[in-house]
Every structure is written in C-alpha cells, then in structure tokens.
Amino acid sequence: MTLKKIWENKSWIVATLVIAVTFFVLILALESNSVTVKVNQLNIRSGPSVTYSVKAKVKQGQRLQVISRKSNWIKVIYKHKTIGWVAAWLVQNSSVQNVTRLSEATIVLDPGHGGSDTGALSMSGSPEKKYTLQVAQLVRKKLQAKGARVVMTRDSDKTVALAARPEVANANSANAFVSFHFDSSDVNNVASGYTCYFYHPGDSKQLASSVNQQMTNLPLKSRGVEFGNFLVIRDNSVPAILIEGGYINTARDFKQIQNPTYQKKFASDVVRGLANYFKNHS
Image 1 (tube, one colour):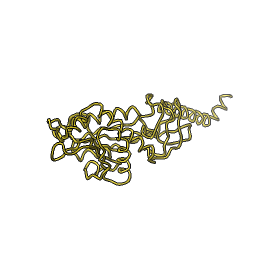
Image 2 (image 1 turned 90 degrees about the vertical axis):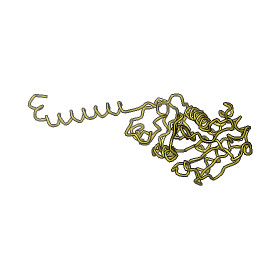
Image 3 (image 1 turned 45 degrees about the vertical axis):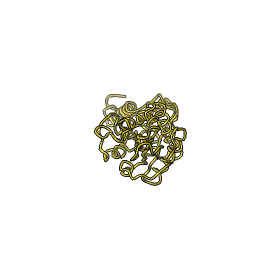
Image 4 (image 1 turned 120 degrees about the horizontal axis):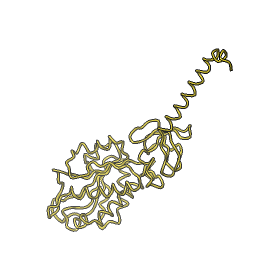
C-alpha cells in the first residue's frame, strides 16, 4: 500500500488499531481478574447464597472470570456465557474434595456467656462460659473441615452483649445460627438432659429437630425440641437454635459436660444435624 493510500485510509486503520488494543486490554483484564477452581463440582448459583438454584457445576481446574463480590460470594462468568455466583471460600479450598450444601453455608456459632458473664456454675464453681466455648470451637473445627464458612460471636473469654449476637448472623448473611449453653436448675442434682430450643416456627424448628435427632448417642437423655423465648434466637433473621447441652449443677451431667469425649460427640452430632438440615432443606 502506498503512502498516499495509507493516508487516505488512516481513519479505518486507526479504528482497527483501537479495536485491537481494546480487545487485548479486555482479555488481559479478564485473565488477571479470574480464579481457578480447586474443588470438584463447584456450584454456580443464581444468587449469592446456598438457598439459590444451581445454574451450572464447575469441575476442578476450570477458570472463572470475576465480575463482583457480595457477602463472601463471587459473581462470575463461566465459559463466556453462564453468569452466576460461587462461594468465595470454596473457590480455592483444595482441602474439600466434593462440594455439599453444608460446605456452601455460612454458620454462626454462639458460645453462650463469656467475660464478665460467667453463666451458670457447677457445684464446684466451674463456669458455664468455659464449656460453651470449648464445644463451639470443636464444632467450628469440624464444620471448617467440611468446607463451611464459620463465624463465631466470640472466640475467647470476652463479654459480648446479647443483642450483638444475632446481629452477627444478620451482618454475615448467615444460613444458620447455633447458640451453645448448659442448663441449671434451682436445686442441685434434680434435673438432667439436653434440650434443643427454637423460637420461630418453620426453618428454625426444623433445624432444632434435625440436630436433636442426631444427639441420641449421647449418655444424657433428650428433653426434646422445645419453644424457647431467648433473645439470641428470637431476634434472629436466620434459622436459629439454642442448645442446652446438659445441667451443669447436676453431678452426673457435669461429669459429661467437662469430659472431652462427651464434648466431641456433642460437636459431631451438631455437625451431622446441620448437614442433614441443609441436605433436606431447599
């Protein structure tokens, strides 16, 4: 092409170059803002929660272009056509082999009392707050091993206001809230057993029933699933339950409450109950 013809067609050449550069920059941007899936069968959902429908499943090793983020979920494009949401904590979690509804859930664990609030006392003066934290930490470890996102209302011996506890669930767009306590009676050694409480009917009652059904292997008796007017579950906008894991001022119960074997069984049962709830809950 002569210089004259090049000059005559300069507008077309410039336009072509602009398009080419723009396309190249777009490709670089997409590649730099992408993630590689490290779990198997990652769900792409229609919205940023486990409660939304599944639009597609992504195999391990696939790349997803990131559009935006919300509530620890990532909005992505898959194969340049499918747009949806994936759980951010699962995208690069290589320790989880297969994704389940439990692993896509955000669960708030609430160890009752803490700090200046000791809770109930055993006959020897041991505080309830110590054991609620121990059990909640065990549950957290087991849930995280299954891929779930776990948020604690407290993870040390500190004071947390009652009203602030359900707010943790609301602020984190949680899918479930579990509060841990140990009961106390007016007179020592007259009551025994564990109870799962709910306030709101529907999902919360279903969650309480699901957890209670898994606790039959414990050496204490079940006192069943009951309505409970407790602030931390009453003022909660997500499925919420409160578990009283035994009577701390009953010698037989306290022997179990402080026993690591009992605590591990208790924690495992709660995790199984949560898993069944999410498996059967659409």
